Structures are given as structure tokens and as C-alpha cells.
Length: 168
Image (tube, rainbow, N blue to C red; front, side, top):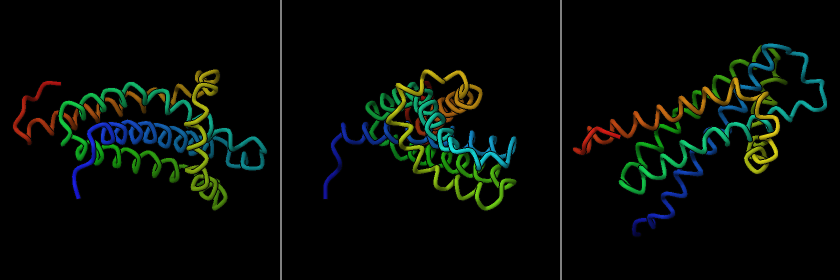
């Protein structure tokens, strides 16, 4: 079994970065929404928090996805470090969102778990979700900035361990 083509590795890194931004933003929005109003689950439009959070998270993850793709294109072995970094970010963001939804009870946590799948629909509707980006920006922008800093940090660690220069 051979190595994957470079374009496929770059595509994987980019898509994984976009999914990470979408999931973290949507689940944190869900969690904070449950802390703010645990009875909001009765609202029929509740699932839109996942669509809007997913689209806003995807939008703020685009610069990080491009940056990660360039880093992987220059050094294909960096994809291991990038994957671990994005997995940690996703685990922290989704876990924190689910933890924040505990005050709403089992229904809040259940909707959070169900929302992981609904968030993927938010990725598809990113252009439409940009009309409501202002409502999601307080959650999405810090996540986008922290993702970019984490990827830069992972690249710095990669260069230090693999013997390259430590500049980005």
C-alpha cells in the first residue's frame, strides 16, 4: 500500500479544518444557549443554532484551512501534527459545548449530540449563513483566532522536532 497523493492529503487537511471550526462554533453556541435559557428546547426553530453556528464556524475557519493547506503542501509530514491539533481542538470545543448544555437536562445534551450531525448541514449553507454572521461572531471569531494560533503553534513544534527552521 502506497502513500496518498499530495493533493488528497491537502484536501483532507482543509476539510478537517473546516469541520473543526464548524463543530466547535455550533456546539459552543448550543451550550451557551442552554445556559442562557434551558427551556429553549421547546422552540421549533432551535436547530438553526447548529446551522448558523456551523456556517459561521466554517467561514472563520477558511483562513486557517488555507494556512494549513499551504503548510501541508510545503511539508506533507506536517499533516500528522495538524490532525492531532485539530482533533484536540474539536474534542475541547464539542466537549465544552456538551458540558454547558447539562443545565437543560438530558434533552439539552441529546440535542447537542444530534446537533453534531446537523452542524454538517451548516457547512453546506455557509454562503447563506453569512447574512447572520453578526449574531454568531462573538463565538465564531475567537474560535477562528484560536484555531489559527494552534495551527501556527503546531507548525512551530513540527519544525523544532523535525529539524527545520522554527519560523512560520
